[in-house]
Length: 410
Ligand code: ADP
Image 1 (cartoon, rainbow, N blue to C red):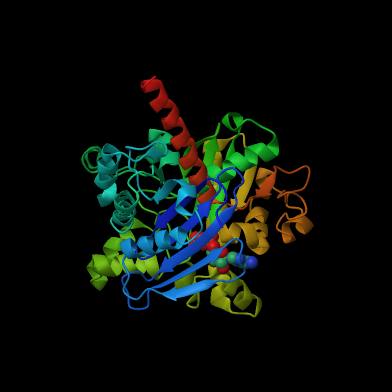
Image 2: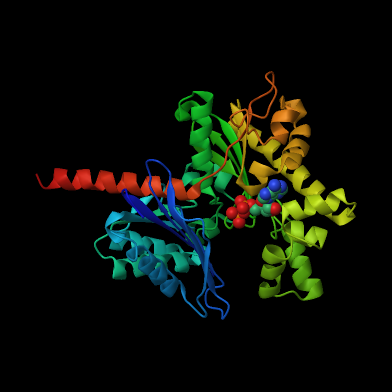
């Protein structure tokens, strides 16, 4: 049962829809769920209500994003007073281009601007726009807010966001670095500042979000000043199935000498590379650690490359965030893989990073997330919560717009 004012959070991927109902104040998630393989015969929706133990799984064969959202709304409507408790809908939107430096209340003008960004994220933004339109149709009275993956990184200085390509490509086609995972980096930065007892506006951090996608961000005085992802989420660190940085000349080589076309290159770099490509067995770090422990050499190599590249990126980001107050790990790997944190930090000893092995092995569980020695730069493990950040942004923006509204019409 939904008992307090709640935000419905929707995160539409290219073929999936994550959803949650969250109480922004307490952070309690009343409902969490995922619809996957949308558009395919084996499309499926899974969800759990907080007050039940049961995990529900229902086939949604061939369902579109729109019908998955409609299913979620029926689910909520089936609860006593369910729909009345929803005060707003927060959408994760992947790309806000240069138009959005913060989350925004959805208006027709804002929706137009989001659609203008579709060409920058052709697989994701159209699904996000579809989600917004479906809610507008079904719940026209409920305010909606867009929370952008890119917005936190709009504070990057030009030296950090420009590629050394002809300037015209930037001016005419928006070719520049944007960065992603901004909601997660912002969430853990706020938590880290609170942990350190500092004002976020005076806090310098490097945050490493390590999930299936991976990125690290340099945060100076609470603002993102550099990040490893670029124009697309392909740039930077080694990820589950993405290569991260490669020599751009290699793409020309594959195209000229092996005849790879754009479709094949896209699949290679986004779906067949990274941990999966190197190991040949899995994109999943837990599986790779198990195999490496059993002597699988390519699994061990994938872990070596992942850790080395991450250490090198963190050392590079130091240039932008110096003097640093803390290094933060988050995401499925960052929060759970003590081996990876230990390997990365051991390569950063010359930057005064020294882990406390016991705290690290417990994922900082008994030390409020602090996994470093006392004399070390603080290293923190902070679980990310993008859905909560979206819910809080949504509630704040709705509250603020209500105040403005009252001011406008005394
Ligand atoms: P997503 O980006 O899809 O949200 P997650 O943040 O859940 O992904 O991270 C998924 C990654 O976290 C996978 O590589 C998974 O193996 C890894 N992971 C989760 N738990 C552990 C663990 N205990 N040890 C090592 N890796 C883990």
